[in-house]
Image (cartoon, rainbow, N blue to C red; front, side, top):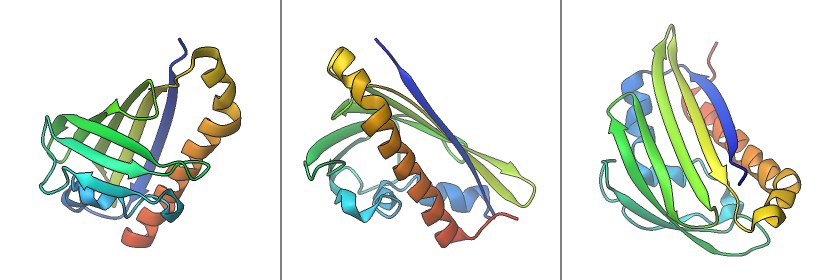
Length: 154
């Protein structure tokens, strides 16, 4: 059982409160997801984030295959961090921690994702050629989109 880790950081020239207001609103996930993924929230994004919140999406990550993804927000500490975990979807495990901390001139966001692929060894074979590059592409898109929205940290 191989568990992979994706770790990213990004600095933005905004306040913790501004970052939190944007990131803790589940509806904004569509804004920072590439258009080709046809991200559509089915339910659960009608209020600010809270522990126990269930959010259902349809995404099209690869090959035009629509996938239902259900996540639960398991932990929330206002203006500091939240955790989402996949309950149903394409991964055998998806545990995503989002941290925000103040720094001089803005904030630093940190994402730590632990994930496991389905299909055992076959899934592991797809990791370096499909899954890892696709996740890197999605998180790179998010970083660029957040710069477009909030400006570049200098």
